[in-house]
Length: 273
Ligand code: ADP
Image (tube, rainbow, N blue to C red):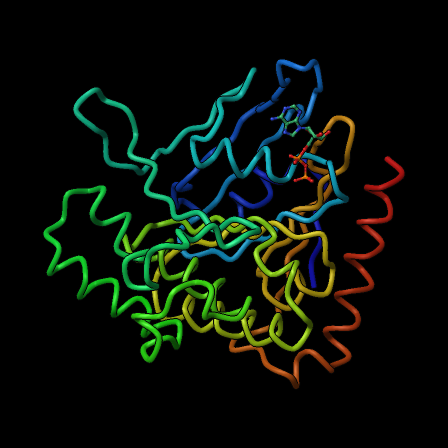
């Protein structure tokens, strides 16, 4: 296991050699109009195919960072660059992200299939093709038998699967998840952790996963970026070198326990920093 102190960006860039990051945050700060300084001086690089968790106490600015990467809010200072991204007609980078919120946020009057078709229909894809793509995305999350089910007919875990399918149906290069499994029971959460890892290992997308759970972050991640609060800033960047696939044997291993201990210590420092 290797751990590096902040700032995370240069240390991580060294691990990735000459590869250009997909997203590059430099000196990013965010002050809301209420006056709250949510984050300050955040330097972060995300590389292609990585699984990175953003871990920190509640209110330390994790969601603020995630939302700014998604374009749902601009930094007050600093910059977010997309060095390898395609450019639109105005020369702006195409962000190419999928977003999974803490709540599944499904349209209650639409079926699972129609919910997942929505991003494609917004891109003006023909309805037949959108339906086929949405059905394949639902199949990938294990919901092929529920295409025509309405959200009220689905369990919490199944609704979250629909939400993940909707985020992945456009085949984004980066999947951003904001504490997606926090409201689920432990067994469902473990299952969804495994299913998310299986999806990630099959496709080439990068994951940025917000959580306040040390155990969840260690199980899932290749890298854990630990944030401290008031103002939110990056304190540590911990590499979890355990191989994939990870499973119950990893969850009960000495290696996992050791990693949790290291990350817990970093989180404790973050809480008092
Ligand atoms: P986390 O995701 O780590 O729980 P957030 O990014 O949600 O943290 O919030 C960081 C800080 O910014 C908190 O103090 C929160 O109250 C504040 N905050 C978040 N969103 C807004 C907003 N839209 N307007 C004003 N303050 C906000």
